[in-house]
Amino acid sequence: MFAMAGEPLTVPPRRPGAKSRRPRVERTLSRDAIVAAALRVIDEEGVDAVTMRRIGQELGTGGASLYAHIDGKDELLELVFDHVAGEIPVITPDPRRWQEQLKDYLRQWHAILRSHRDLAKIGLGRVPIGPNSLVGMECMLAVMRAGKLDDAVIGYGADLLAAYVTGSAYEGSIWMSGKAATPEAGEAYHRELETYFSSLPADRFPTLISLIPALMGDPVDDADVRFEFGLDVLLRGLVGRSKR
Image (tube, rainbow, N blue to C red; front, side, top):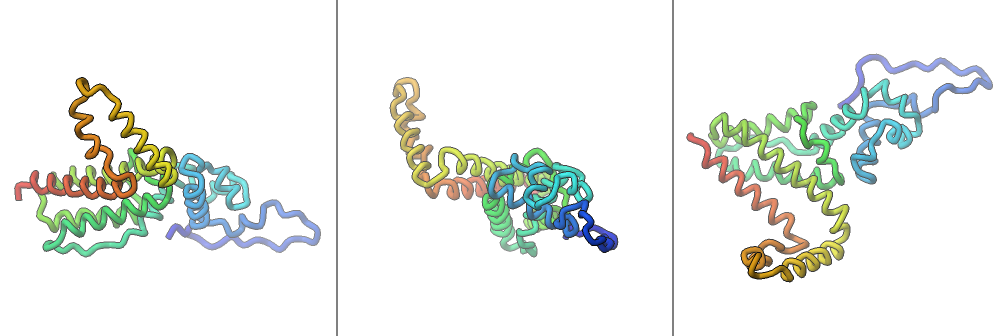
């Protein structure tokens, strides 16, 4: 998918006893290998750990060797994000069930981002324009158009849905790497927070205290429930704003 154009480098035979100027791994270095290595680092250490030097170490070579294939860290992160975007199956729009199709597409996108630690951070504040991302964008827009939404609603709505999915996935990654690193830790934090809210002066925070059960939810299943709630609210809103 990310193969470079041109013929592969031909390495001349070594003279007996001559020292190689490059580690052996560099001869098989490619964009695919670099992207795969970066994704491994993200899964294990997070997006902030990705540097050209760190990826070079992962591949057993120097960071400078990567520049023959990648312009720099920014391009590498874009390539990783686009590679993962290719995991989302393409949907053939069906006007009769477009809302469920769109929800299913967004669920899969959200799940894939969540499966790669804080990968969603890469998608914040930028418009992915890689080949896989463009295919996904076309798919999502086509499904929305099958629902006969106004063009303006599709334009704003697509951006809103992308921000919701990416932001939700990133927030989840922060949550899972901090207060809820384990199910037990997550439940303990919920109990601590609930105890704190309950201790607040009832005369100053009567509404907050009365809504503690609804605000806290279930520490185990609540993330999925809240995500589904958001999808439903957003789609209902888009349909309501459309004049068609």
